[in-house]
Image 1 (cartoon, rainbow, N blue to C red):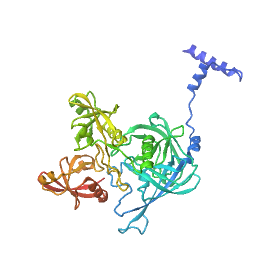
Image 2: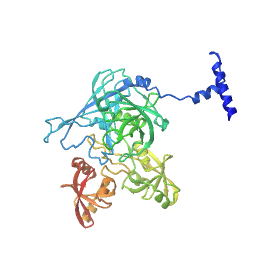
Image 3: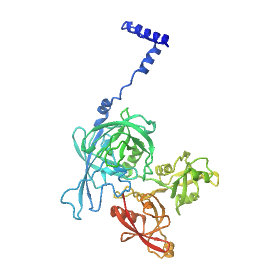
Length: 477
């Protein structure tokens, strides 16, 4: 060891004595570079390059007085709080009259002729008055091109030319641990830059079936929503959309919509004004190790078909309750949410090949997809009618047909096909019949969700269970 230290010391001494124009071997040079500490990324150059394409968004939305908050009555409101559309009441506009809600957010320019991407919850609806402020202080009134609440993506348009634009990156090539940067307007502080790393990819969040979120530790706060998430090459890989928070402020976990998902939505919104999605017509559940074992699978994978809707694409294809969908057009289904995303990305009327597991054997069937009903602009983000989804309260509902209603001696009513989340906590069960919310009779899932949106955080459900009818009090957290 002494001999090694002596040799090392001699080597450094000789190196110090070399003339300025002397060189050492390439191998020694590489060792020296590897041993030298690496500096932080050059965020200053990145911001100079991409900053002009990031915009500040301010909105004025006319709302009804029974809208409690800008994000609906989502039971996950405190856990996954929307952070770019803080409501501000204007004095003199209460008392049962419509009022104006003001909000702020961020966005970025994706085409030189004025198309801007942001979040749906920033914009609100097509009637919102939207103002775009550029980095050079110019302001434009914007037109809402389209809103897709299922992915929380919106497109707005300003009348301008030769605008700076962002470069679109590839989220699939981004790696966990890589540096990323966000630019936005937290609390209205325009063009604020924050940085961090990618913490995880393909995160599935509650009530989210179409977006495999990118999780980061980049600091985001109210007003950052809708802003871009950049890689170190200055390319957008995501739209900052949600945070994990118990206080409403940043707590070290934020989520971004992958830009490839957002751009597919953007293209459809520009072309059609809405997003067209395919639909199978099944209710699915996640495979657990116990379920996988009972169905004869070597490991938990695929999507278990819990129910097939009558006269649906799935029924016409021959799918049955108890089937496990393993692949769609050759793509592996590792978890159930992937089935909803793949089918939703397909166009109505298109054919998909489904590899299923039935009775211990692999089979293949072909389905011609139906069309998923298009959202209305005023629908809540939790208002879903999609394969395998529970609504924001945690219910999967369907209307009773005439024969069922006659047998149960009820008028209208909704059958609870699955209960989870807040609904399960208050005691609702599969098989319950929901007859009314407060004093309002219900006869369709859409009507129930509209009533739920207006009900606030406290309401009562009239349910029939067996031969008994009871009111179930609900208080949402």
